[in-house]
Picture 1 (tube, rainbow, N blue to C red):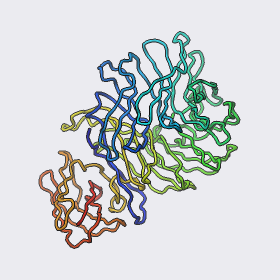
Picture 2: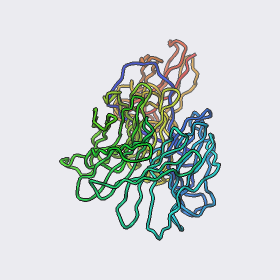
Picture 3: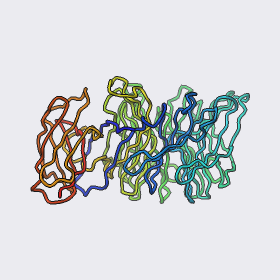
Amino acid sequence: MKRAALAVMLFLGEGQVAFTQGGFIVEFDSVQVDAAGGNSIREKGWGFLVIGHQLADDGSGRTHCMNYRIDDSGQFMDRMEWDSAADHNYFLGMIDPVVDLDEGGHQACVNQYGGGEDVMYLYHLDDNGIFTGRDTILSLDPADSVQIGVRHARGTTDGGMVVTGWRDVGSAYPKAFLLKIDSNSQVQWLKEFAPTQSLSLYGWGVTQYLDGGYLLTGNGLGNGAPDASFLLRTDTAGNQLWRRYYGGRSAPYGAVRVDSAGDIYTWSDYKDPSWPFNDWYQVLLRKWSPSGGLVWETRSHYFQFTHARDFEILPDGSLITCATYGTVDILAKYGAGGDSLWTRYLHVFSPASYPTLYDVQPTSDGGFALTGYVVQDSFDESNPTPGLQTLWVVKTDSLGCVIPGCQEVGVGEYLLDLQKRLAVSPNPASEQVNVVLSLPETGEIEGQARVLLLDASGRTVLEHGLQRNLNQLRATVDVSALPAGLYYLHLRDGRRWLAGSKLVVE
């Protein structure tokens, strides 16, 4: 497992604040046999549980569900393949499809496909992510030409769960569905929703409303009309109360949440038909009233292939979101009124590698944890796994920084996790600190590279130039005049943050 070279571009600055715990960025290329990706991440007392999928270890080319455990510093602990002997492929869903149970543990609806009939299973995991069994939820005869695609699931107040996705019956166009499962793993009901403005309707996000009913979001496609997102509210039995189409030419992604006051939030994307490029979008954050009226909306991040993924409402009413933005990922925070607070753009060092995030979760230290996948650079000769689709995890502080203080270094773009190439010694230090950053063969420095040392309040207390020697940046920094304490060391060139580390001065 290695640390990924990633980048963050900062568009909005913040005032100086006391830093919280930092984070890490890890890839699982050394502990996965073939292509993998993360769909859900959960914080645990021992670290983080990551749930996703991977091509099976047996070389069959089948996709199986998998969980990975890492400690709170991002170090790999273990992993488990749920169905190591199964001769089928399995699909876990898309954007955070795992449900947390009140009594501990987790559940997930999984599609089995290929090699015979299509089946939907409910998988059970204990609180450590250990697979404890599964129940058959639906079994479909392929002769009926019926397919089911699971996309998202959320827990319900009765100890059960609600699932959304789409059903394709072959003789008609796909319909969005809601599937209610009780606390005994039994199907209570299955409701389908036909499109009214398109040929097909797909469910992508679901949650329970305060009155026990449900909210479903997704998109419709086809019929010559502009593809549109939709928001649908039901009663407790899954019967539609109202439906709203919005967003224009949306892509097939989206999520929905509800706050304690009963207001509804959707996170999707938007394309105006008048825009000159067919594959350019904005993300679209909307707040709705309980009756389906629009309260406000925020459109932002116009770029190629911009698509919304996951989001959560934070205790203060602000929202943390993730999305794709061309060949990079977005971690963005919005205020309770929809105002943009800050954005971090995460991407792999090489533009030939494409990341995707599927889940963002708040953490107990006020930061955020994200998971998804990245495709390794196939042009870097030093990369041992070129072209591999790798599961990855990002842990940040409350301001979206892997190393606290990234927003204070005075540059726009941030190359994260060159820390694997950064050496800072001695640490702790009392007099001088040697800083060495070994650059990749293709690494280019723009302008004068410098070391900045920030105190716990975000104030720069020391700045020193870095000297280039072949593929290394070097500096010896005198810290003897600084008060004892914890500091944050940052390296930057003329426009980018390069790497960083905590430093203890004695």
